[in-house]
Image (cartoon, rainbow, N blue to C red; front, side, top):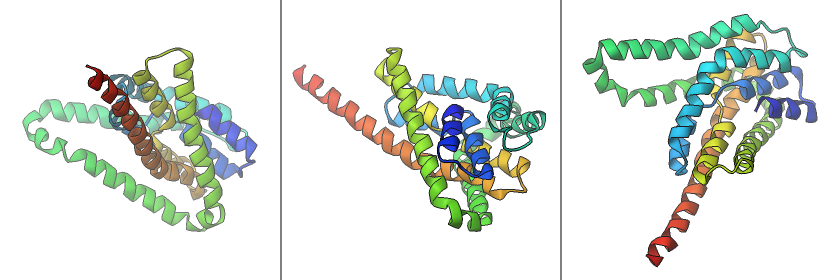
Length: 240
């Protein structure tokens, strides 16, 4: 995804502030929603969870490093500061959640089912704030950003699926890899852009739009794959 983002930025000759945002979301780890989408698509959910976990744990090192290599031609990047931000946004909350759950197990259990909804509401609020604050830039470049984001996301799905087929992975694994590659932790991209590129709010817009778009394309792709799986299973049951 980072490489695809860089190629798209060069291909469409994006303005620096938009190019930085596109590359930033491409450098983020896999999104947690990919696990749910993989389950909906009847893919290998265990593989999806493993990929998301590994990419998230490696993100503090690889996200700043790859972003520095690809985007430093447009702007000065403090990779060390970005590493700290990723630790604060991604890993510290995970560790805090594990500690709280281990200490207050019974009290926490009643709130666990509500937390995904709280997370979704928080992300939607952040995305809405970013889009609202960048209204002028979106009116000027919104269609271009949307087109690049849609292409980036779609090419990610295709690249993941084709690579899996090239290595002759099972169909369920191929679906998991495709979804994992195509869906990014765009919420992290929004947070990093807001902290490190606050002087240029439009930098956060690609991540914000990606966050909205992949939650449309992901379920659509999952529905298609799930329906194909049902169609393939039905004749087999009929023959039995």
